[in-house]
Length: 231
Figure (cartoon, helix red, strand yellow):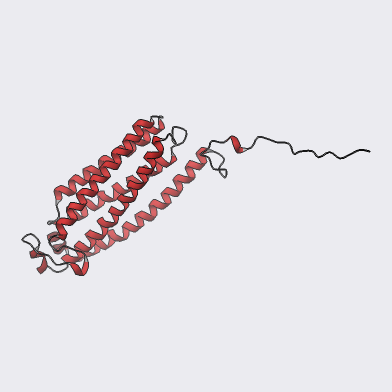
């Protein structure tokens, strides 16, 4: 009597031989990279919209009260603001170098470029800390807490709408500072992965997306610097 024999389904080549970094819902590394980059650009657009609202608020109040904004602006430390601008511009260079090196499979140089970016970001925050504390010591706070005292700041108490300038100053630079801190965390994580050899010329998506984010942080400061320090 003939018996049925179970036949196992034929095995074929599947996507198991894809690179480890390639998600199964993408057909190629290039498609995955393009999708990730598009997502990052959409995120960066929302960040631009966030700061655009603050830029508009600044422009409106400056148009209404130019004298007050001028008197308040001259109390900011232009030297420290300039140094911080140079620091962030240099960090843009180092993060760009990290992308360049990882594309050439020079993981060590990419790693140290990211560490340099991280160090420069730290310098930026330290300088901003000293700027803030110098203001706080003389009663320069945002909103209702504004109570200037000291030879340099006491005359501001008699100028209407100066408090609005410092409220805008602290909000804009404070939110930008938060972005710097977030960027430092991301850069540190990416640097650790570069050090462990997770990226190379065949896959560097995370490194490039981190660079895009950091460039946005730098560009925002390039707008904040003249608006606040050189008004």
